[in-house]
Length: 189
Image 1 (cartoon, helix red, strand yellow):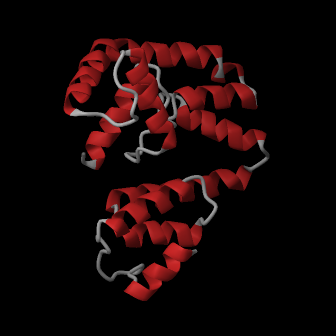
Image 2: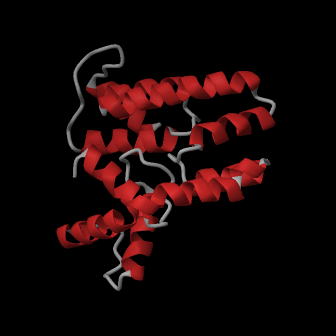
């Protein structure tokens, strides 16, 4: 599956109420857990991986509920995030990480944490993460990890970088280009 296909899978699972923890195109542990939950609910073999028939079923199911998804998002915001408080904001973000009010919830959480500059740092990190995902290269993920080794997306960046390395997609040169020795050193780290 392409990255866009994986994002579509995550969006469909979220629309059906199976939280993937975000729609970043990386099918990590939360996405696999969501897939397993969906498979179990539909009486399918619970593997955490989707075959073509399951992809079609997921697409059909999500298509029938997507018109209600936005209204469910708004209703859940009223029940949680709109009331304020860190727990309510986190509950909203857990269910709708890319929802209508997701950025508002993140900003309010940053304010609650007394992190006025943290919001700017968080935004810089998010922009760097988005650039790394868009480039989808070893160099881009290494660039993100150099600046945010313990960032919100560090684990995902390492996983995707490692997958690209396993596939032999080292990428070429650039500001974050690496030679084979550097790659091995980075993998050991």
